[in-house]
Amino acid sequence: MKIIITNKFKALAIAIITISVLSGCQTNPNKQLLATDKSQVQLRSIQTRAFDTSDKAMVLRAVISTLQDLGFVLDNADLVLGSVSGTKFGKHEYIAYQLKMTVTVRKRGKKQVLVRANAQYNIQEVNDPKPYQDFFTSLEKSLFLTANNVD
Amino acid sequence: MNNLFILSVVLFFTLLTLGCQQTIPKEALALSPTSLEDRQIQTRLYDTNDEEMILSACAGVLQDLGFSIDESETKLGFLFGTKDRDATDAVQVTAAVVLALLGGSSMAIDKNQKLKIAIVVSPNSSGNKIRVRATFQRIVWNTNNQVTKAETMSDPEIYQEFFSKLSKSVFLEGQKI
Image (cartoon, rainbow over all chains, first blue to last red; front, top):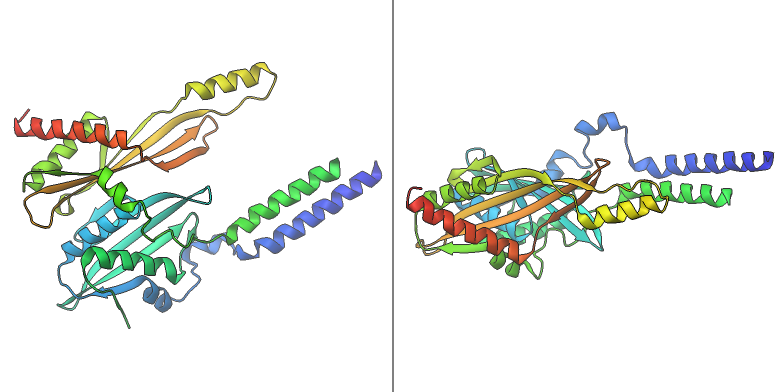
């Protein structure tokens, strides 16, 4: 009996160690509010593109149709603020996930608009450049305009 | 036996904590091969250039279906509505009863659901028709208040029925009924 209890404690200790090691990627939950993995400048360059048009409404409508093509259901939209948000319930290898996106469109000078996309995958921020590139590629097709990198 | 149990608990937690390292699937924001087909199922064209009339007919059909309109932006032709409904499934109830009779513990069954609809109205490229695209999602909770389903509803029949109701609404709006 004693041996079993010791074994149990051993296993518990191993479990605690494993958990604390593996949860190393979890920072202090109280700091999540303002936590990001990348700097503001890096994030903006990944998430932003400039398009050569001054028609904000037209770009917003293209963003809306792109989001719909990507399987998002829009949650809200605002022309003045130039923002659109949507949620996608997707499946990858039979595992369901939730993807939330907010896209903002604002004028940059008289001849350009800046489009910034922002995604959240389940309970994580998305700062991998690839998904954003895919998004802007789809948006380019629906706008018939080229997405320019912003310096 | 005990050790096996503990090992499985350890493994479970290991997998759970590893979960925080999962990242976004590569194709999550790329167009899927079915996106064109989905668009056709979700879209209808109306022979008018009166975007406002179509949008108000859409608001009317949302009310016909018992949705409340939570968000709207008329300048972008956008409407968003939700409704909460019962999600009890007879098959699940039967399974739960059978399980209880066999002496098993009580099984959680689906209880309620939130249905979400987003409608986007836009003029087509030549400006003589109005395009309406509707998309539906639902979230289902069980008797333990856990989310059991969160999905996009993609059954073409739902969309056919919705658009036939919308056509009726467009007609009724036209007749000022």
